[in-house]
Length: 305
Image (cartoon, rainbow, N blue to C red; front, side, top):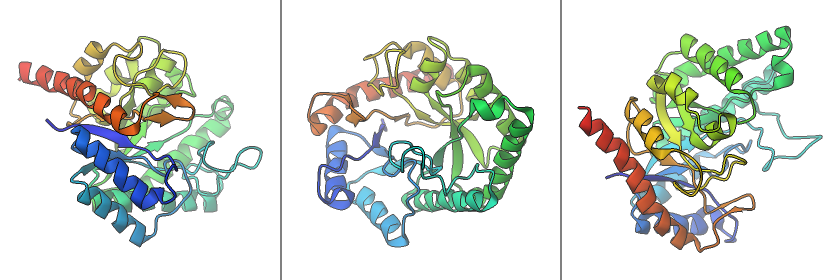
């Protein structure tokens, strides 16, 4: 059975972008995984050159792995980019300033090009919801106008390449506002352009013990960021190391069109959080847990067929 895990990067190797990443991919493969979600440079405004895109594809192919998702970038990563008060947001596809929006679209197109090269069917994107913006009717209307225009601008790129955008549910806004955003997006834009990336950890922080987002929008589910937490912070833990109800979660995913394997966004290290073990040992522990959850979805579908 196919299984997928996210590859992040930690600059513990002086050449993390080739020798270090090849090492990580080898460990992922040796643990038993078949697919990866490419997460390096997620959120960065960094543009991949064509030679880099080809290099990434060669590394994944050389490891005997397949790409299942790419974490895209809106140029607003508070960790990786220049911090407040001068945060780096020059490339942002939801910016109200047109040249910034156009630069942000180029950044998304760059990640679509990467996804197309490595065989990923989707690019996961953050569509932030700013409460200050949404509290004002005029700025809220402008936000959604920009969002719709950007998705319409990206439609030809998605349909030409076959790479879809996956909108990820985020923890920074209320459940009601997240539901409204997803309703607006899915009512206006076709499945050929955009679907849902369900982030289980984010959903738990917004609605402890609840599954409203997945229950409501699972018909548009195209990929996942699955991980566990203790309902307090975005821990990105392995299944059953937190509070999530994996029986309910897998039953809902089984009742969706989302193709397997499921993608798990569970890093060895995560901004000071994570596991006190070596990286190879982490993947070795992760594999049977991820295999089990993926198998639960596969079995549920088989039982209902």
